Image (cartoon, rainbow, N blue to C red; front, side, top):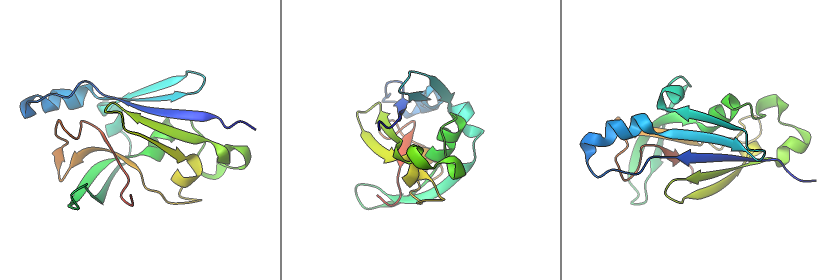
Length: 148
């Protein structure tokens, strides 16, 4: 049995050095949800703002705890029509998501581990940290897994 593969690609414009240009960079950020058949859904920051916002705390690589604000990855998947919740049963339990970011970061999640009815791995796509838009080094969008 072959699992259906869902790919989430964080497609971001090139990072800029000047913080003054960060608001333009954030406005141009795009999140592309693409399935293995090539069907895509592109969400810009205005689309993401319409989804429920979540705040979560996570430690950075230096051990400092920061508060991130963004949307649940699961909500983005639901927006794209990907099976979640009570409909995630049987062969759909083998489906997975590959997240590719513009900086080369890549991670895999099963749909089941993102589903609160089965597990509760909280993954958000953050747009801000500590109440401020993410800087050029971290943003404009960042995948945050608080438990990781």
